Image 1 (cartoon, helix red, strand yellow):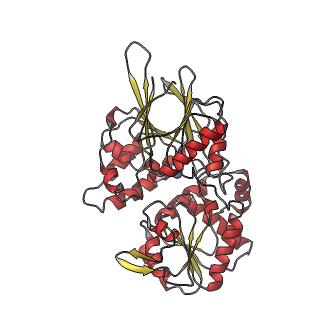
Image 2 (cartoon, helix red, strand yellow):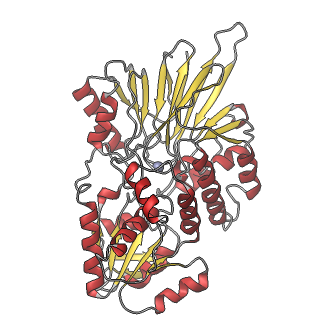
Image 3 (cartoon, protein in one colour):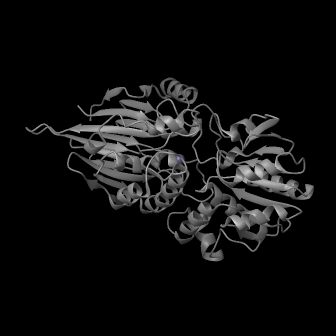
Length: 454
Ligand SMILES: [Zn+2]
């Protein structure tokens, strides 16, 4: 019987790493080992040491790795998998591969500052050589199973992966599910008739309140910040969130809805990722595709200054008057945003705008929870700036949307494996699925082997 084991992404929102084992029914007993995602654990204090531990399976025995999307908590340990002997094939949507190459190189830069690097640039290029691409809705036969990718609507190139066994049974691994309707992307596809489902639960216990109001709220925060004459800091993931913010600012400036102030995109990585977004056409939703036809570049406007170099970045602090700074990392754990926070958090005229999920243990989470004093670079920093939060830009489906997604297959589902969330979120979602849809839903335990009847 096929087996599913979570080696990461169980009991935590990050570090997705799931192993599917298919045993051949033919006379020679052969097991095909398939991984879904190979992500880095993030946020937790002991994450760096856990990321360093050897995989609990033999990496060289893995035949194929499928990658749902290019967030580092889904791809971050792929070069380590290569370093431990993985030489199988990797598959994803083409844009996921392109973005992953940038993000992994960036992660390696941070890692190589340590004494023993987690992996090297050679491991990245080795993994890239094994990486093939596959389009949405083009079924591919792998012998023991068939694979088809569906649009998850989470970030550019994000896919849900459906495995179909030889007897026609199915399991869908969602990766992260989008918060539809998304600003840029098409809605998450509905998938029905599934036998098994491995589903994320980042917002398993919460609903987004302000999605309908997100654009109005964003405009309001920007306007208020400009009128106070302070600096608006927006910590944003380089991938997707930054492009959504640029898109919103572009609309506000071009319609002259807000005063003209300088905007700094202060992240070399986000600048490069935005270039990939600029070349994409057909992966956006209809509305965005129409706007691209009119505007050509929906991520650029005359107020925008890209400060790739350290020298240009340092100049930002010298600019007086109202301004907007977008920088990573999204949870203020590293990157240039931290330096800006050190400078502007004590300023009562400045504003910090949180537009994404803030993981447990991060500086972003402390600020979100209203801590009035934080430690940055060993210095005690008073938080006098306003802290605003817009949850509607979240890239994750909320609790109601997750239940709706599962309900599409409620009559056929044999079991739902709830994963990729903090324990309270996963437990809450599993309970809702049992109560409201009467499906067998379990909170996936790390390392436990689940037999599935595919
Ligand atoms: Zn994600």
